[in-house]
Length: 486
Image (cartoon, rainbow, N blue to C red):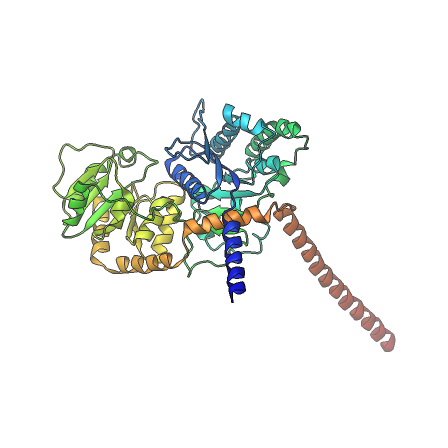
């Protein structure tokens, strides 16, 4: 019996040691956008807590001190800001941002250090594939990370994408679909930067530069900040991992005393209104501030409004906050409605804490997130600048009066919490990718496209041969018939 106990203990120790391996990981999340930074920083904290060594290239400074963390903060400067209504201008800005992050002095010194080794590169994907060169440089696996909605430009990197069905394609917003990958100017800009940056770095290591068209398929593993509930799509590509909510604190911070008192004493509930951290509320709501204040002043509910603007007069039920502890507010049982622009983080937090949404999407994936919430039955949408004060008031009153919105979000929140922990899944998936090693194969679109061509040629060949055989047999039959008649 003692022998079996010792064997059991041995296997437990082996498993624990296997899970506690310290990996050296390079994380590159250069987007100078607060929501992206929150996701990148939370990603890093989870990996640090799991015992790994992290080198982080980030676009926004943050206060994390850890003996296993080495941080490079990159600044992005564009001499002239082009018209953001143009998809080409958007593509140019994104590419120049990613290019400048690799050319930053300290980061470039890191890349030139031939003694540096990494077990994994985690690279933010944002409509370009430049960071794929890091995988080839360090000869290690690449894990793409995207803070945006699943998108065909991202999914094209997976070898099994064409054989899967992206059930979220209906949610892709017009702003994103207008982006044209075939724009040769953007493609050449990215390819030229790839060659200029990585050729000398590969030369230092005595290695040849891999073609840009091939390098981006080295990783073919994608983590996407996207929540998929059990009743939703199941036909995801094999190496695609929807993951969302890992940034939410397990222990929510207590509310400041003044807010705690306000929310505790809200007899008819609290409406929390925030347009997020990336856009200035004053600019977004210009011309609507007075309309909204008039709507709020006639409600019985307490309104917590995160806003940059100071008002000369506030109704007794309205409290304007320059800073709001959003997770703490949403977790309070008296919070009955969340008015939001529908950013990815806010959408997941609403689902996590079970709060119905009144969506006011402004840009990009906000339309996607709100449309999904509406389809799932726990949200309604109003449009700026088209909706009137009466529209907004009627929508608020309907959502408060009709319990189906709150009941539905509570139901979906339970399903969300019944899934495994997103933070645990993230760390486990990172380790899985490292252990699997580099996956090198032909570009999936090329391979599968050729397969389709050969399949189609085969089908057409069969049809052609069958048709010729039918024509030939009828021709022979006709000739025989003519001879007999003669």
